Amino acid sequence: MSKRVLTLIVAAAISVATVGCSSGPQGPAQTADAFVTAFGDHDVEAAAALTSQPEKAAAAMTSAWDLLQGEKLIAQTGDARVTGDTAVVDYTYEWHMPKDRVWSYSGQLQMGRSEGRWEVRWTSADIHPQLGNTQTLQLRSTPAPRARVNERSGTDVLVPGAVYRVVFTPAAAHDRLGTANTLAAGLRSIDEKLTGISILDTARKSDGVYVAPLLTEWEFGQFGSELADLPGVTYTKEWDLVPTDRKFAPDLLTQIRKTVIDEVDGKAGWSVVTVNSNGADTDVLKEVAPQTSPSFSLSIDRNVQIAAQRAVDLRQEQAMMVVMEPSSGAILAIAQNEAADSDGPVAASGLYPPGSTFKTVTAAAAMTGGQATPDTVVPCPSQIIVGERTIPNYNLFSVGDVPMSTAYERSCNTAFAKIASELDGSDLKTAAAAMGLGPDYSVVGLPTVSGSVPEDEDMVQRAEDGIGQGKVLVSPFGLALVASTVANGTAPLPYLISGHPTQVSGDRPELSSSVIDGLRLMMRKVVLGGTAERIVDQGEVYGKTGEAEVDGGSHSWFIGYRGDLAWATLVVRGGSSDNAVAVTRDMVTALPAGY
Image 1 (cartoon, rainbow, N blue to C red):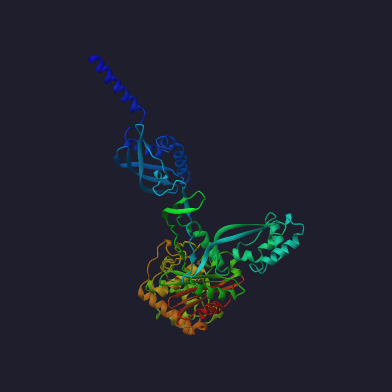
Image 2 (image 1 turned 120 degrees about the horizontal axis):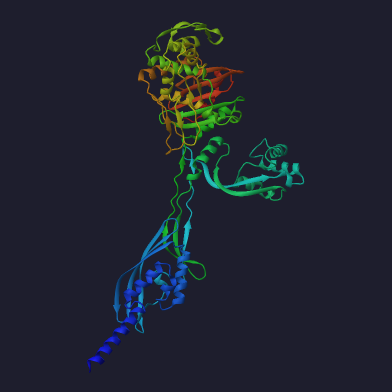
């Protein structure tokens, strides 16, 4: 054969080979790699063209991308094993789906050579090894149970549930009063004072619309069918945190609900399932369990809250009480009656003159500065002149020269006005801060104001401040901290929701143990033989009473503690401090044994 003929044959062979290479991958590994690359690029047509059944393959791969809500697919090939005109190539897929869901698995592609060309012998196993040819993959979301809110002993006070929002538009009712009366009758278990007239009055003041209190599913079920036929009445069903007992600390739970509502959702779970042609699930290929958000635990103690609430509810005047656990700072109860509710959350943030309860701070300042001890003899005349101000005792009583502990026990204004007048300008403020009064507390779930104790270089003003009748203002929350400090030895850090620490702005210096011991001695004397004798039969109670003169009367105060239970009770314009002692006694006597 001539060289020219040989050259032509070689050239022709090279040309054929070149054409063959340009038509696509030649080996099983290269074909498999091209298939998974196209599948991973979401180019299902290109991937399907490399299979034995392009139409079925394209439909199946499109379904996988769509039903898995695929955002990305990382596809790779592994080892290839060739046997004549067949081969097996390993693959690994990593699906990335919404909300950071990732699913990885491995399988095998069955390859075949037909007419000199390698292709993927199509089955649904090329998408997942356990996927049947008449099945599809589907991504499912599993909602996480929402968190609950429980009180200190573990019982639920707020739970996830449905609520119904009922709206009445009188203009849409031909018999406005009749419809309003029917609505009022249905809602009377929620608001016993509700009437048809009051509903219409509220609507007139609210752009012609009355919005009823949110109803739980059970409450709505009591008369929901009747609502459907009332002209002008509409309702919607919504998700919310629902109180288990509408009467249990309603205002406080409203504040807590607002605080935690955005944190109650856990992390949803998800799964990938196979579904047959009839729409039935056949297998679970991947499952990630939902992560429930942990329940919120309140410091509120059900027994203490109920006892405190019942005690303040017995008063006609505005009455309120804050109860704390001195050793931990746990707020055990925030109770105020309906009369007090009209002014907002005043138990924790309302400011009032403290009256003689502030003598506790004055005594602490005097003992800290070395001006006096409980045994120091001080004068207690019926009245005393400080500067140009005449300060009297209640009903002008006088006990002469007595130890400071006796002056405290008898609540002698003249003795403590004199003591305060002789302090330095910052002493009262410093002692108050050491007892928790004055700093700002960011208690999660509860708006609080502890009080305001000014520095004052004016002797007369200090005298008035020292007996709680000057510029000093306190809240029941603030005075509960004062009582807790005496019980605990140092000012505790108050909190309401476990795991949500309170932030404090302002210094809180510590009192010496001798000052704490002196205060305890004096507070015990107040109960044993002083102005709080009414509660002497309730165990080892320590306390201090107070009356703060204001326009229209005087506020009635009692602060104190027993064991690891401290409180501050206020009856606004309640007159004698004995009334605040009586409210506290009602609370204490209602508590189960062990408190």
